[in-house]
Length: 194
Image (spheres, rainbow, N blue to C red):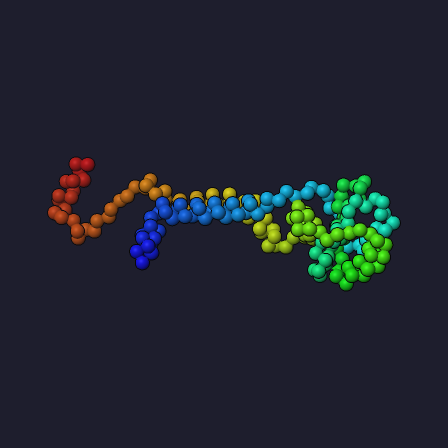
């Protein structure tokens, strides 16, 4: 129990509160910074929902560098393929029902080599799994990530304006008239001397 009492006393100190707030902000900033440590591939992406691109792959087998299948068990699996003579990665989003037919009728029937995309590949190609239109939560998260330092400085400025900087303010004591000792003449004389 003495620990909780000491903690409560420590939290009354303004410096301790500021230190805890700074540690919390540093932790959030470090988490946001370290969450994006995987270097993203800068290859351009050509997005499509055209299944004809997948059915045309057997005729372009010699040009095909790789063919990957991302998230095959989801509602919308994506085929990722790249040609040897082009830097762009083609991303074809198909419905799950069409994926099974494509796999059976095109890939397996023509013997096209393909693989399931690994987690490391998907981590370095996050844009391939996202649709072109991000939702409002993604946009809000990106905004917060871009402006985290600005928001932290604005909050610090608001706290300083509201509470002042500890140790820098002028302290004044207000004495109620009933607690003054002496007469009103003594008080007037004191003010005239100063």
